[in-house]
Length: 155
Image (cartoon, rainbow, N blue to C red):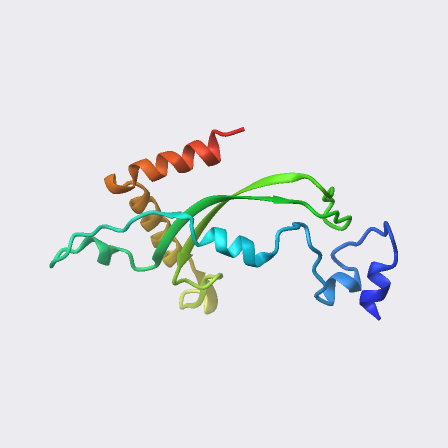
């Protein structure tokens, strides 16, 4: 019922409180099938972790960071009134994928001073340190330069 009402109303403007949105109906914005995008993502360039082995193995310094990969996908938009997307426009999506073992939200921890729970941001601070460390490795210099040129300096 909701889908029929949402799709048959033409140029109806939806908002975040609209029952069609809150019922979990998601609208397409790209024409390329996700399987094609997934295949392209598998070919993205990935930064390397240190390869030194031994007692002081620098790779062990990466507690939360699993990988950093990046690339560009070209696709075409699909008309999406709700998202304000015009159809038929070719776009380049510059994507950086940072894979981590952390959950998406900080962990609640008790604050014994106030007696209330707080959020533990320390692991995320460590993750940011790991990201910048990996990007600063000599072995990743060319890839990081490519990432900066493509993602930050291209028009």
